[in-house]
Length: 87
Image (tube, rainbow, N blue to C red):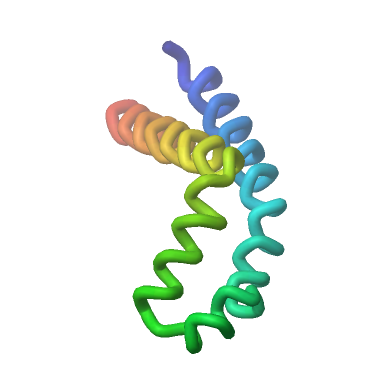
């Protein structure tokens, strides 16, 4: 495939990654202020990892962003390899 195709894939996947990550910012910022943190007794590591797992990893945008980021990295590596081979 041409270099132009991979540039387009790279840009689109990065934009989709950013668009899927922006709505997750409030979820991440609310985690320390959740009532569950105060009930259990603070933000110790086990509590924090439990709440992160329940709030963030079960959010559908997390997986969409993860896939878009993976496609972005792969297309970036392909562009890099194509530019090195061209020289």
